[in-house]
Length: 274
Picture 1 (cartoon, rainbow, N blue to C red):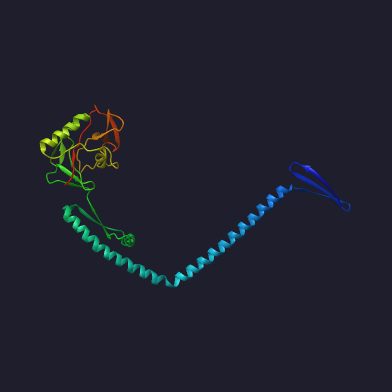
Picture 2: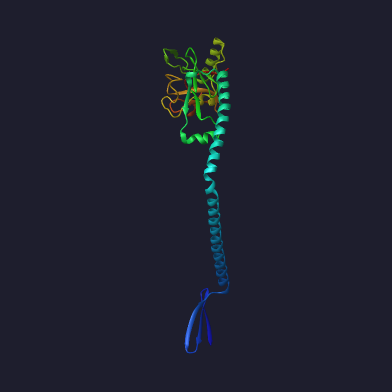
């Protein structure tokens, strides 16, 4: 047999003669052949591992299904009876706590709404230890004379009307008065001295807590704060890093802004709850 090698790029052309017939083939360098062989070995191993893992998973799934199926009804009964027990205990505890809270805070019963939960949520509600009914109080409680409103989330007590306006016949009448920042602080101090009640200008967090961004013009609950101007109100919070600006809340959109202290803005006073 006669053999002849001819290099072409990274490959070699191998020619050989068998009998009277000339044959040829391409032969890669040994380094390339080793790399190709290793890649083929890894590919075959991955394929074998995947096949073995799939067979194991299918076998385990069949075993779980067959094991669960005969006891399915028994397990469902046990789960249902357990959830009922949790419901009963939860109802007793929550009813006691809710009644104690009601007595302590004297929430008018007319302001409490009982809403039944959807049937499909009953089981999950019981498992979470929550009463099968949701008791939700109104966020605001109006004072007897209608001039103040208590936010039950924060405990703060607000004047229902912007300064300059007067509460009359179920709404705020008159024209809201605008103040520069320093004048707003002084007005709050004057109101505290004249009434003997600790009225003050709210900080930006307190003022923003009564803004309602789901509404606009004004972005506030109109039942709790009637006839609120759809404009910005001063807070007592100065802008950090600037002695010329202070923070305010826009009750047109519910957003927080920074204004020059000499600008005129509206004022709503607040005091701490009891």
